Image 1 (cartoon, rainbow, N blue to C red):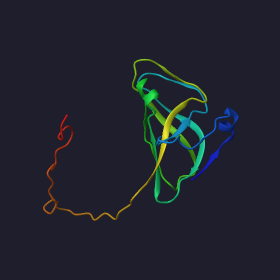
Image 2: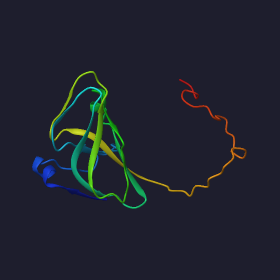
Image 3: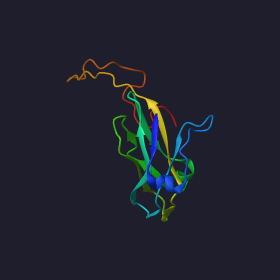
Length: 143
């Protein structure tokens, strides 16, 4: 995968690097500071443009330290055909303002293989196969 840093990220002297051994995600940094009020969303620039290979997808996920403070990522699927700047949509679920600083780690990127298996659309549920779980949803497999 090729990763390009724009001028804003280069100016911060932040190095985008492979995860350490045993870590799954690449750290993503904010290139500008901002304040996110409780209940508000903010779209933060990372200064990165990616060439995710065909057959893979980028998934933007929370960093545990940021999530513990109430900031969570939303809308985090990066398609392999996308070439624009990677931006992170965050929501503040805490009761206090969250201050993001330029150069702060705000999320992480996972790059995973994706299968786009052909879908066959069927208009009737009569032939839907059964499983032990069945239609059990939230909390149905235990606590």
